[in-house]
Image (cartoon, rainbow, N blue to C red; front, top):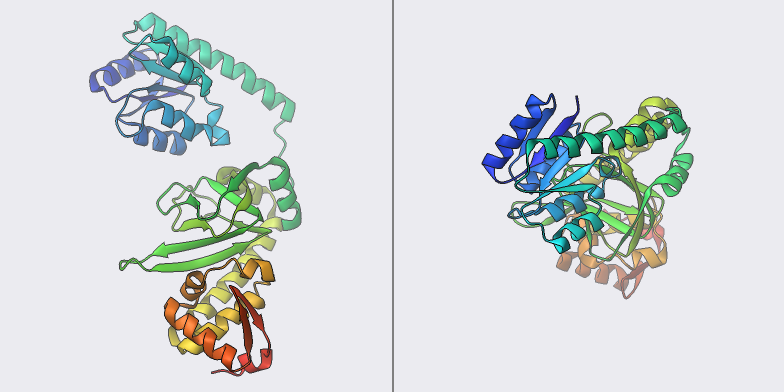
Length: 347
């Protein structure tokens, strides 16, 4: 039988409803608030959701909005439980995408008939989609084709400057392809200092932290500039890697190169002088990262200093010294290298 998730803060109603459904042969999962309900829906296999509207902290409308943003979950039948027969409240829920509603107090027959109807309709639609697709496995041979697939089939997301994409401890449910813009990932240490772990520019992927598990994001991701992204569910991306070993090998090769660069960067950050850290950062962004002039100019001095592992004041002072020595030219936020060999010779 189907698994039904009940999200209801009234313990008596929640327990009674669960007992009715279990006696009818359903498997029941229960959450006593909206936040817990979202977590269960994202981590468990659910066939239908019963959700109260009026709840503290995260109400039913917010639960529906959150789950509707996840492609593989928004198709699950969603039924609101409402203590009011107010037409406006019901219409709001249906406009948000709810499949049905049940007005409390409800009797056992009404509950079971509504659930059976929604599950039946969902099964018919799902079987039709399955037959049409014939369960074909997506074939993607290389990263170039993967980028194309993201743009053709991924959900398009527009992010404004300084907007957060995800935060640490949030369930990692999407992998992102950056079509345009700049993204940084970072952690905040116990002293409130920002530690940048990665800078991503156009044509880059980010957000994948496991090839086979559903885990939480270990860091934050934030837009340095207005960005255009495409995202796919992490479960789908993991499946693509499972059935496309050639793509997996190419991705792993790129990943190993990134790890080597990260280790070298950490060593430089730990043992180099402040001036050398500044120079290495300039060389990294102009060389290996292939930043274009207009992109580098969008990086704040604070972000560059954080990447270098020094204070903003020290970074700016080193830039001034390098400029006075005729090694670089600084115009606004843009940094132009005038003497590459001279920079590389600094110890």
